[in-house]
Image (cartoon, rainbow, N blue to C red; front, side, top):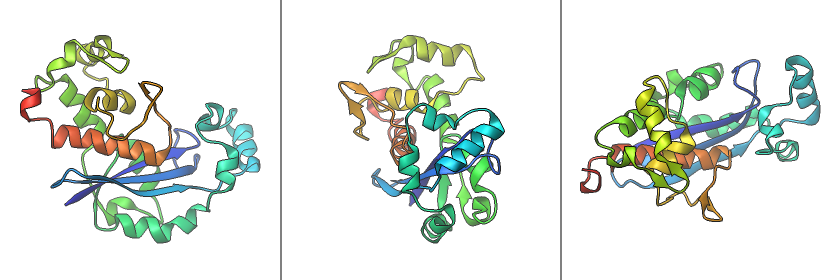
Length: 220
């Protein structure tokens, strides 16, 4: 059985219809073998005129362009969103799906016509909730003394002291996957690319660490 992890890059945080999807990435986690596979990686068409219109309407260029994680040139080589439906929808149809922050990816963008993902797929728990609860728990022994690839004990203590705070995806990956199974390390540091497919793979490994590796002898 597989769980399909979906990640989106978007123009902003408001959700549909104000914001647009710029990238769709999907990775699968095989719950039997633990294998993580990149299943889908697509950049969506978005041009300079759209970006200028967005800035005029909302007062700022889409965040992902400002930070340099994605360029207009890349999006101009992408495909229109409607063209992805023929490949994206069949991939998640009838499957177990989740994301790191389902209230964003699924509720704000993918649960609208024509995708309506909650009617097509079984939407599971939020990986962010699972990761946060695990890192706070007694099952995660190094939570008070962490020094892994630039992550310090201060990060973990913040989770313990603030019960409402959820661990960010990038921190969760560094904390739970110090061996960097997604191979995102650059110059000795685990780096976040803000590419939807890369993020989906990291999120699938986080899910694997909690569900399949969280109760072995290494962490008891």
